[in-house]
Image (cartoon, rainbow, N blue to C red):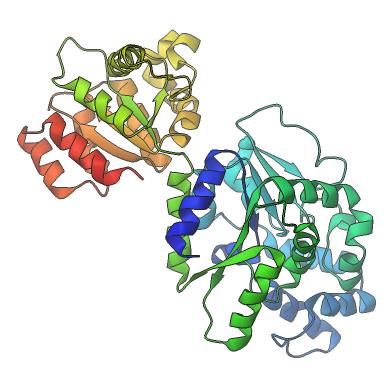
Length: 433
């Protein structure tokens, strides 16, 4: 499967709440944390093993360590090594992805730090089948335990792996349910990684001709026949490799998924003014023709005009628009002071983050403080922001230079005051994924 085919397929799974990330230690390496091999190298020297080979059984080495010392010693050593690390670029992309559940074998707390108060961490059997009360929260399931949890939940030694299905039967059952119902993407693992072997075995057990859901694994290419054969063998597990060449390629893949996981969605922001915007109906016709999802934040402004055009057209053409509009709460209805109280801008931005996380493209017309805040949140959440500014005296005008990657010719027309609705639609045509 090509990268583009994978991105399109899995992004669609995420948009329909049927996609899951399964994160391995390689994702934490850029934060200064060791992978499995380097982690073991540090400890086994204490028990007289000078070198760890790629072919070594790493859980067995961990077993040797606790046989000579104790699991408490191992836990303390790992905890010391893992503290004060910060999320990296991979984690920041997870944060803006339309994803509901993340599984991980990592012991570190980088995912928790990434999502802060917007996540619910599940480690023990008693937690994994509880439902989230807040639909906006991300569910993080730490299948091998955590440095900030009980030692008994840490899966690291050979005996831990051997007893995994006995000690964590409910986590195993939850994993089975998710594997049967959702598409998984494994990343941060190397071929032969012991952290994923149990999981792959479970995937293999669940494979059937009736279940058409595919799973994927993102792997850095290796010019090695063993690697090629291992990748080919993965299809026996119903896991399909997606190969990339450089670590920057992996980041680009995750970035594209983050954007496309929102579906072909568009949000329009701009203040309510008396100035008529010409040919706004052409924009509405484009949205309908391309079958884009219209994100409605239910606030006053240009969005109301577009929505009026949109629904009127649908009614005349007898188009069912129930699933063509996605609604989000109106912040100004929650607190009318948001409109003119600059001290409340942080709250307004937090209110709009879920909306922006659901929007692939944001079109910004001239506006004031509220529009500026929405544009800045859109940029923070990785949206493609396309400005249609015509008033150099508006507060939004100063934001043009903050919008990276804006088409050069389009930006030139903005600055010279020669921008037309047809220019906006042409750019949208080339942008929408």
